Image (cartoon, rainbow, N blue to C red):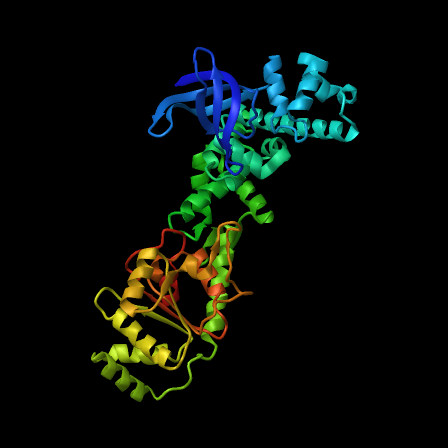
Length: 466
């Protein structure tokens, strides 16, 4: 890995969202300014940069240094100090006041701002308001640097440190010292294993209750990623004890504390087995079951029809004679609030869905079609001749909030919802989808229980069939 250090002359670009920046740096031994790219929480002209990374040649921008780690320090030359103060570090100083500050205090200017800010009033043009603004901005910068230094010292990369500071702000050090495992819960890219390493450096005991609880949540999360909505109590304890290399009794106490604190949920199933749930999955499963019960006991929105006439009309329009099983399914689909159409390839699911759609459209029903993936939605649109959307697009996912526009308080505008490839839907997404179904609407669930399992927890189609 190469190293580079020098004075930052110019900040060409900086992304406030992720900290990525493009800098022009004066480096000893280089005639021209060097372009440096990397991620850093704050950066100002005049600062001294020490970076680790590699030299690359960009096709458009030429030779540049791509930094994996960047460390900033205050400048120690008068030129650098003046440039630093004239940057966006403190709004309202600008070049003129930066020059006056350096002329008045020289290299002591930083110490004056930090420890004797009242002396700033000696500088022509600086009154109490400007003095307070300079001091406040300086303290904020100092706080950021302390936080970043703390995170770097515990092996956290610049990019992740930036995310942590953005999430926790000035409380980052306090929160991480109190519970380093919060990083695994809250920060994308930091899992339990990294958080555990940080915890060990901070002196968290290997057999602490804090570590045991975090280990339980991590292990259960790993198991749900394999498709489980919950896991058998004793098996979870054993696997967690093995992972953490601590006694089973400690894990048992930690589970009791986690349940008491509502971090985990313990329930007994119909077979008498004790199961442990992550709250998100427990409530998703519970709410989905409740909504299905409410829906299936309602009245179908489609007006009553003469089924024999409707069947003859459909068969005449399509030129396809429906098999007895398909005829029975069609009759159920236009009368039942919740119906499942299932079976392997070639059994006639598509023909049946199109027949159902013909009847519903003839009765002026508002029908929404969706599937879990873009490919499945496209295929559904091709086979039905109607618009089909992914579930996320139908519910209108909002990346800013991480939620959906459509939910129980703002339901979908449809009378019938048809969901294809339902075996691919996990329990959380299914719960969110059914939450957005209006109470008067009917739902037709289509899929092959033996194909395309969901990548997330739960086997929704199989459970509905059962």
